[in-house]
Length: 210
Image 1 (cartoon, one colour):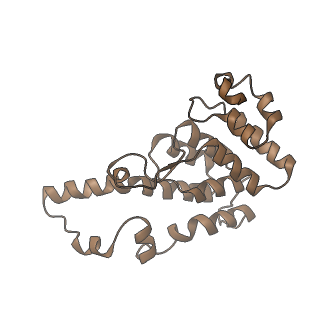
Image 2: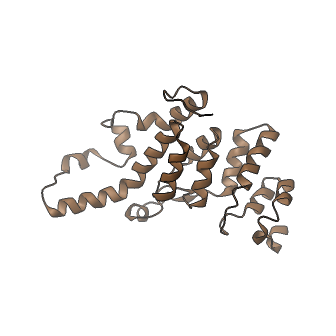
Image 3: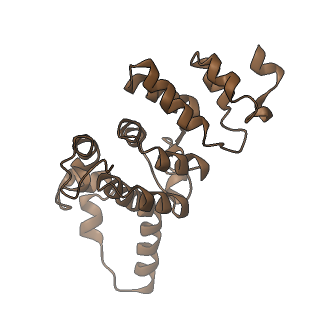
């Protein structure tokens, strides 16, 4: 079942569009949109491509803003219900996600895309790499614990929470930066922690029991 039809009129698609598309679907000349993608009026006035140095400067600027551009494409793909295409872009390109994307993905059940986000280590808010990242203090890792909290705040029915948390547990994410057992215990999901303890045995240590 698609979460948004071609016209973007599905119930979940409408929610997604309201939260994601209010910027991307506007006229690109509007100041708010330009500010969002990091372009000021002064940038437009001073843009003058005549020399090799101008081309290099433009290339550098595109590199800085490329993650924002790719993120907007991912938003459009998800809005259109093209989750698999969004997964491919997430796997191969650097993104600059925001927390609202994580919340909307949970709300609209884009769990395959979220799996790609975590498996390919794109689970951060803001620019992670590149020149722009060095000037940004807003880069923040979104952990599985953060994701669990979003799930619990979005879905109030216990059975639905359990269903979604099981889906996330089945991702079998490698690495030690996302201690899923500790996150489950923190969210009072003791039974799920026991159920998946064998799958995530690398997290079994004395600190987990303290």
